[in-house]
Length: 271
Image (cartoon, rainbow, N blue to C red; front, side, top):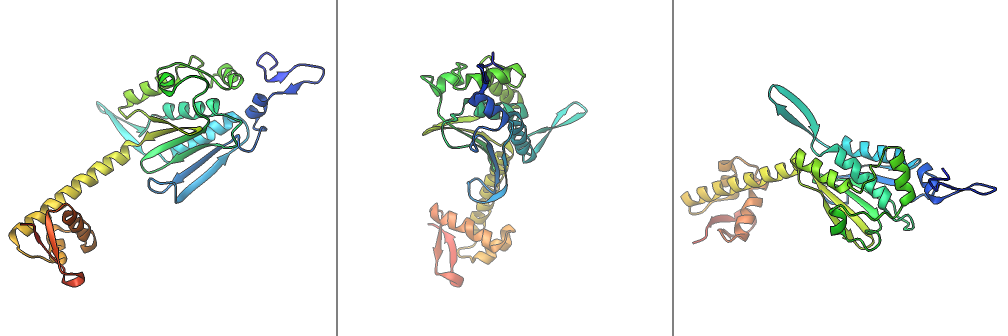
């Protein structure tokens, strides 16, 4: 431990900050906060947990928390069907490890891992270390803020140690067929957004569905000079409330005209 700079050898061995961080005895902000939010905004909690204690346990706990809220995809290879997470789990673990290794422990904030409907978001206190730019880091250059932590985790095979973490993350994403994570420097914080393909598929499906319903509304109005929302809803097979949403969007787009108010409102094609 003295060779790793975890303790300072003298008549009375003194533990370093790195040693305290590894054991989970540094500071209450040296933890990982995890949350599952409803929707795509940081508003409504569905679940939340805080992982303290030994650093490796924090990494494992937060990693499992994320996997618990990811969907499963089916990979078909010939007659073999194999289930896999919608995002590459190795990349998620690597991102969490990077967050705790490269964070600034002098900032009184915690690493935060949030799962939304559309993404996994990992926020780490502290921007890119030293003179290194974000672009250079993503290209594989390395400048380590917490060298003792990094070296120790390398020794126990948690960290690879060649500064190739981002390269491996990108390779995992390319092999998986998902978009690479988005990296952002926001003030004194580094944030990673890892977008979920399941949400994108549902969004694309919803968008196509909306277009189809709007086309049906325009078709109905092309055969009826004036129509009420309830008549249109019956024709396209939707609830009246949802139909009114599409009607409002078509009015805003300038494709149809609304006449009257409330129950007496009717719709017609714009001439």
